[in-house]
Length: 322
Image 1 (tube, rainbow, N blue to C red):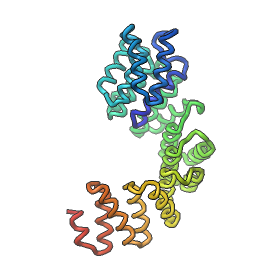
Image 2 (cartoon, rainbow, N blue to C red):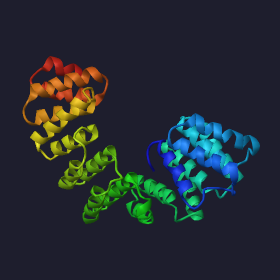
Image 3 (cartoon, rainbow, N blue to C red):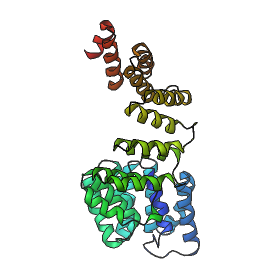
């Protein structure tokens, strides 16, 4: 399952773009308001969405579609208890409302309640086995439980036209876990030629690809990104560093630091590159900056202490390990 509540918005849109999301069959003003509310949610206009849903629920408090969408609003507001109650009210009103099933399962997954999410998604799957959001949710749960074959089965059930960057990343992860490298390469080529992925998605896909040993394919994907994009430059630096291409790594991470001078992860990454090249003073200077920005992060402290020890700076290193 996607790991952020923001992804519930994507599910809302899928409901409206699919065959039908409605427990009943709304018409006229009610239908227009529901569609307008869904659009408002997708644009982050939660107050507007709620103002559109309120009149529907005042006139019909058991309207499953309005309850479902208001649940999405509450989830976006991080009001998880209210969101859960609204999704459950939608299901009480319309037990076969697939959208409410998926949203409730999504809420459970994002709050670490995966065991509760699975039976809800399985119930949705019985109602609509062809739905992309249902199959994607099940695939994510099975992947997280390391049941990769079953995850792949549900990913294969999703038509390519319904896929997005999140789907691609999950499919790539499963293929790499199953050591299906030829299929992973084919997916990478398809992803590279797609115009749908944004820079963040491109960077995450490339990092995952490189983690599976497909470094050249990962760098090809990043090569199509913008040089003024922080995610692209950071990922390029990290992947080159992992491949011991230190000059390229240093160049890319330096560019990333220009874009985000106070990014702790980038400071740690470029410090590791400098340390690998034997430039200990340079490495320590980056870690000093990182330590000022994140004095309590254990990874920063460890990197600082290890580098200081390499430089025989025992008085600086020892307090870190106490």
